[in-house]
Length: 119
Length: 115
Image (cartoon, rainbow over all chains, first blue to last red; front, side, top):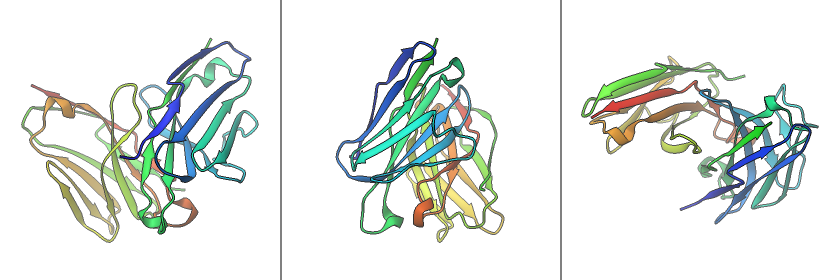
């Protein structure tokens, strides 16, 4: 079946450094990918919508200069956390919407998440 | 924007019993309601979904019901098994246009099934 792969699954970085997370659709083309953040024992909160070939759309309260999103191809979106701080430590999850003829029938697939720890 | 409320936050049942999780939503334009199961350290896994033109959908031991008028939907798991233990999230979205895929999640329910 359709698979969304995230890499890395875990990353530890020092405060002030930048970290890049990749989200790949392995066997389908994704016109749109979504980035979520999940703090421990909390729900998923949408951060931004990534559209192939155009600028990402950020949700209210999400700093676009801190969370850089690039969707350069139909199978890859990247999230870069710039100048990371300990409060950025979280579980980051992407989802991808397959490119089908009808939007209403385009299934959504989630990656397995990336655990970011900033020390 | 959309707001999704989910109850209960924790649910403990004996193996073989049924489990019911309820969600309400605020945006009457939402018409796609998926349910996800999340195991520790993993991403959400879709277990069942329902669209607003349907009142009920069933897949083996799992069923979802939707009341559009009252703006609430429920997940029913029958004959629960220990492997059903996980965190369950409901979500709501519009299933067309640029908003499709932008899910608003409920707060989650920790389901524990005791053998």
